[in-house]
Length: 97
Image (cartoon, rainbow, N blue to C red; front, side, top):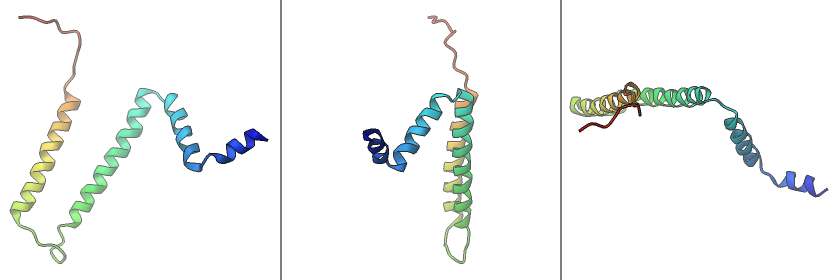
């Protein structure tokens, strides 16, 4: 009877968190990358679409300079992120003076 009471004390959120932790422990690095990269990429795409809604001149007022600043910031961050994926760090390099 005591075990049943303990189970009932768990909230749905706690059960889900525990399930996610167990699932992640069995997840390969590749599977983890795919799961997280897909979710984050979709979030970025959604946010870009929302940003595109700001182009409605019936609702918003902006200058070409505003638009330039927005896309410069996005381009810079995109380049920095691409660089992280392009740069291969190896620990095989030897120190030389």
